[in-house]
Length: 233
Image 1 (cartoon, rainbow, N blue to C red):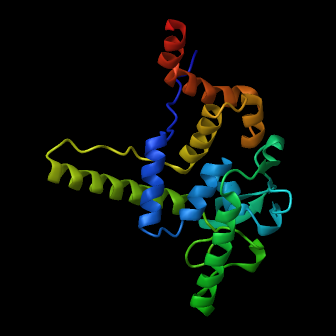
Image 2: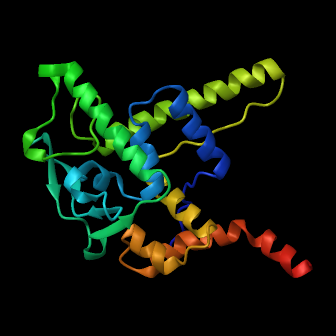
Image 3: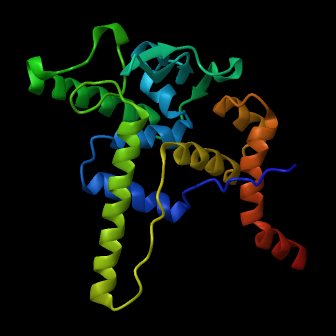
């Protein structure tokens, strides 16, 4: 039997602008992390396990070698660095846009925060030299980011409601987002820029091209009317 396809959440260009504007205006701790995910398409576990040694600033590549996994052992939540989910997941992703600037900002921000917190800095030494951490120095888990994204969505919708109250219009709605939506958004921006699906597959570390093509189909559906206009003319 055929399974129903799950609608993938992808930020439109306008939603992406609203999201990034909110991060900048509110000085979000995770601003650099979200921008990095939008520019690389890394999974949240891959971002959580990324270390400074994995970044080649000379050749402008990010090497994805591990993932930060969360599991329960004897009722206790544990975190450990493991190998990526598939052989294809071990890959290198080129710097796009302001990737280098974002990484430099992240380095300086963590350095300042560590100095400010002193003994309260929680970074576990066994995790190595992680790039992205919580504001207290702990490794970043999926639930940290999911919770923060729920909060951001609520705040953006509160702003929309306030604007509608003053203008007398109907408030816009910013649909909820999750970490994987940023990965889908990265892929969509690649397709919109004309990058070939096979190349995007390598960026994303998909095991099969079909997984990438499922995202590509989503883009094609959104551009059907544009293509018909070409035929019209």
